[in-house]
Image 1 (cartoon, rainbow, N blue to C red):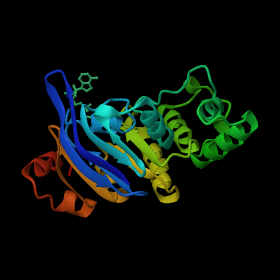
Image 2 (image 1 turned 180 degrees about the horizontal axis):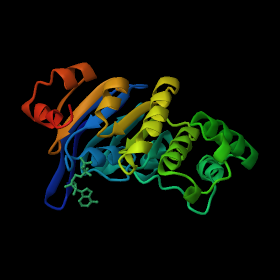
Image 3 (image 1 turned 180 degrees about the vertical axis):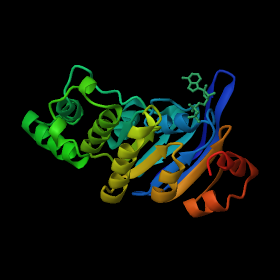
Length: 244
Ligand code: ADP
């Protein structure tokens, strides 16, 4: 379970998270929707302290962090249990697909090279790119690079994968293949997925819970059929009217 308790974050005068409270069950898929600037990415990045919230609590199973007092050891522990898939993939340009996946395994997880290679190949296969093991990022499409990004996250065997708008940098024709891989991950892998995206159909099909955020607060949350078909709040209705 990931729990946020009264999480606050400001950038200067801009209060971006205004007291976030929610609990995300282990193994569930949660999609965070909301207008641009509503704080979705900041909330996601606060989980692994890529963004340090100002106050509040973040609890991941037995790791209980009061963010004001977060120690390096706390942050290390939470990072060991989470992996992130970035909007711009963030692959090493001078490493092959295989080496990109192996990097975290040898450096962070201290695995031997042969063991890391075997694991990397397994996850390359999972995302349908076994034949691209030796390709460099520039030889791959954006969709393929993002699938490598997903394989890299999976290989770390995290409890939680944080997806930060994983398809928003892609040409429209490449979005589908990445969403398919994410759907497969949601079905086959037991970790908790927290996904910031504007892909409403993905949210409808794959999410257990949708969180709708606006202006730094959670406006409402619930299962897709409730939030998408029968939203209670005016702000949610307005947002969805642009998509549905
Ligand atoms: P969303 O993901 O919903 O689009 P973000 O969490 O990215 O929203 O951003 C929320 C607000 O915080 C925006 O006004 C954005 O400009 C601001 N913001 C985000 N990151 C930073 C930063 N590193 N420094 C200053 N302002 C930031």
